[in-house]
Length: 387
Length: 148
Ligand SMILES: [Zn+2]
View 1 (cartoon, protein in one colour):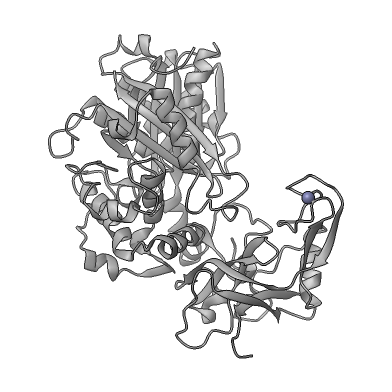
View 2 (cartoon, rainbow over the protein chains, first blue to last red):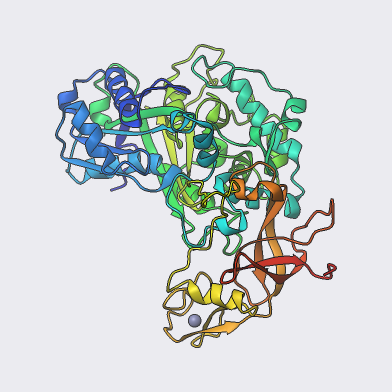
């Protein structure tokens, strides 16, 4: 029996976002999870599952988190799929409940990336390269460092094959900044112009500073339970209508994975499970590690044809009153970077109609959420519906 | 990653290749200025990264054979900001994904560009070798037809 619409997100919350010195990732996680339980209006004694992800160098993150929450659980684990993990945490929660392993599951992600990289100048430089262990074919001996360059290969190829322009990448950056200005918790608070974008500090061409997501201290959490149980609570339940995942595990350099990403097969599964098409989506909360990845996903999710993502973004479609209001809290480019968990939080809030008119997507009943990561090739998708 | 420094030198040592039993033939062949890649006897494909069996047909009959050293730029990025002090004086430099004529794709650095010359996707390239020291050599690439 399909899991579609049988499980729900009954609560959601974030920690403090942006620059939160003196607070580690475990504490940010528990801060978001406590607020999440409060948002749902249940007692922590009901929670019997924890699925989360933290920095890669904290072993058994889920146990450290549950320890501080003071709970034993029927099911818990840490996810290891980068930015594709957070949607899969929610999906796995529904599957674990369905399997009878637990009933009420806290899901979440936390990182203290800003604090870790701002302790000293050396930490700042070292932090630009990947924080994970060196891979033997990672290219460091050639001067290859960091996620911006890896995604930049895709951006460069998209520009060469489809004529995508810097200004079209800029349209993504500007749209999300505009949304962040409406979000008092967003890390970036300054308005942006196209000239500001084009003049931004170069990093790894074709990316400058304003193509790259933020370094943030940030956490987000969701509470998953049966839709039936969620309907008894005070807040509007948000139904998990569909999910999908796909990993181009043969790598970013193989076939044309840089242009047609794992988002294409992943989103297909989510649409099919939810029984909807791209035209039914009221708001898109997309994994925006880099501007290019937004353009690739607009195509791979079927919101426009392959190669037309740049023009679609530049058309104004991503604005709050556009054809596809996208990353309405500011995204990882301007709100805070928490490996996609804040995209899920924002989707829940939008379909619950939590906001006043300055931030609310009109008649938002169906949200599509994306997650991307895991050595550039892992993807997850989720359709959330107002219950 | 950490910034290493050696002895009294103020310039940090560049990151060296990770040389293991599995990766050594690649680096040894670069040092010999005759780049080799794993070559499957089962299906005839060259493949990368090296492994104990072919990722196409799972044959374990693998030999390391020389490649022509020519190919094209599958994609490239241009580093403009310093990530590691050892590369500071090279800025701006181009890291490429090279696609060899034999098929495999992997990362390298483009070298030998004239002042202001900009690489392009699909441009033809050929291997050149740069010694890091008396035992370790990097296979770099330059645009085909570039002056020596
Ligand atoms: Zn083979």
